[in-house]
Length: 80
Image (cartoon, rainbow, N blue to C red):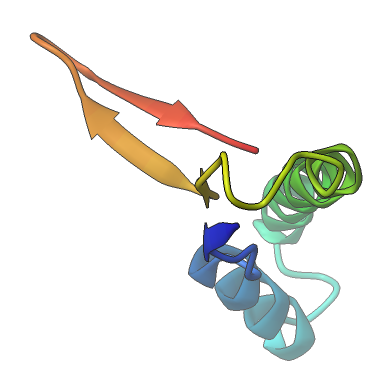
C-alpha cells in the first residue's frame, strides 16, 4: 500500500517555471536546464520503479516515496 504517493517534487516545478520565464540568451539557462533534466530523469526512475512495486502484496508492505531518514550521523534517502 502506498502511504506516500509519487508526486512531482517542488524543485522540479520551480525549474520548469523558471525555464518558461527565462530568456534563451541568459547565461545561467544552460545550468538550469541541466539541473532540470537530471531531476526529471530521477523522477522518471522513481515512476518506473512503481511498476515493479505494484506486484507486491498490499497488506504486507507500506511504501513511502521520497523519504529522507536520519541515521547516527547523516541523512539518507529511500526512493522507490
